[in-house]
Length: 387
Image (cartoon, rainbow, N blue to C red; front, side, top):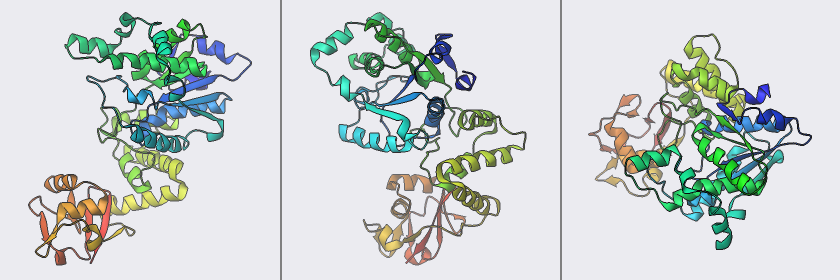
């Protein structure tokens, strides 16, 4: 119980989990994830780490892929309705998400379910489900009450979301459900739905929200302040070296289960980066990522190993006119970003050639001025340009 409570925000109702752990059977521990994005970042790892602890203690983890609830959109922490993805994008995200989740969880000890199994139900069953809850209870949710006070619209579909997520707990026989602190209402509401169906109610465990690389807002891909578990080793290492000092204790506790070492901040960050890169990519990759970081950011040299980009291939979709190369197109082709993002990076001074900044006015450059040079975008992306 001590280990499972460590690093949590809330374990509710008080004393219930301790009673459940005394049962003579493994608990069914649920986590529901809507595949609204293809990638897992370290913010997701916080909850997955706790699930892995339950697995290590012999309990059954039930990972629910919300392919049906993703069509509704979770209103948690939102001031407006979430955009709904196309079904084929949801399916693609679900596949990628599972693969990445098993970088933390034991695949063989995880029960994976899709909530379309039970939520794709006849109308009479849906009416029965909705009839078991009240609108007044739903409107107790902070997100809804805040939007009502601001006279902002709430769709009827959004009101269905907590009901559907709550029914997930009925369908899989959940004993315990995990989530971030922003999910507290949904997790507690699931107990109401279980009670309405006359099945045992789950306990809930909420985990703190991991701050992003800005140290303030929650880690999110849409905010650009994230570290993805599939980021290349050198990129992951470099991002983690930029974590603000003030949130380092949280990163150590929530991601490594340790206290921040009593070392200078830069050394503490190196230790964090080494351990996390090694976890997701292996020890050799962590060592190589640190050496590359030192070469680029300490010794101020270009990395020895970098992708080579042929100008003709990078510009296969156009970009050459009058013997000149259109830089936004080159940057987009070399680093897999959009032309508009390449233009923005140029204007912000984020593009260099052989270590010298390329100004935003240099949208077109002679081809001979680029051949053999090192193109750099930001602090960590390099490519050698070949003719």
